[in-house]
Amino acid sequence: MRARFALAALLLAMATAGCGKELVVGGQKPVDAAGTGDGTPEGSASKAPAYARLAGSGAAARRPQGTITFDARVDLLTARGQSAQLSPAPATVTVKVDGSDSVHIAAGEVPVGRYTAARVTFTRVQANVTGGLVIGGVNVTGLVNVGLLPGESVVVERAVDLGSPSASARLLVDLDASAWLSAANARVVAPSAFQSAVKIRTY
Image (cartoon, rainbow, N blue to C red; front, side):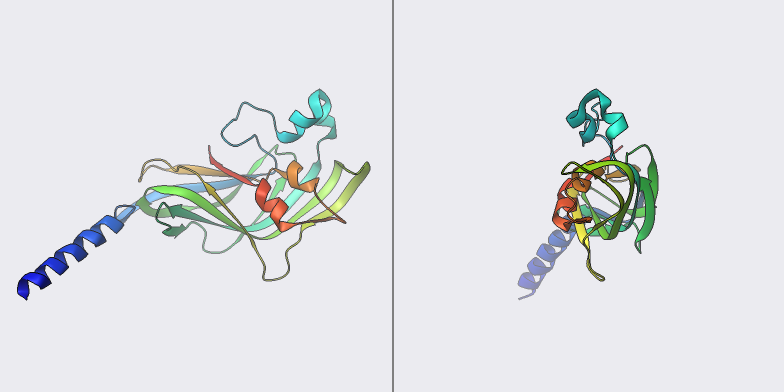
């Protein structure tokens, strides 16, 4: 009987040790997250943004202009689905639509571990377009909203390697605004269109 209890205890200890390999208690990993309105394609900083590839050399004059304000919370995920919260509450951030800036979203320290994905939960996304957006041959300016009702959210989860378990990392949330703004209908963008467009990468 004692031998069985000893064996069971040993197996439990081994299982617990295996689960603990991804998050290590006692260590901290610094992570910073920023957002941009319309950055380069994921993993290819040398390429032009989507609007430039579609519109050609004159794209700079025709690309959407204005600002995007959003509320978002950032979480990091391990391969086993364990999560670490980078921001305890949604941050309110305003970026330029054309991707000419990047703005801080959240920063903090998470338990040391191997993180393989990032999750961003958006509870509000609103663009204030001042020019450059043409839908169906019509110039569109003013407010364009991602269609979220009060209490709703859109969750964007992307695979991203945040490096070695204890090394600092920087995340960039690329809204890829030109992709989903062009899908607006009566100044409202479907959450699914926004969700599909957003990219997350390290930088």
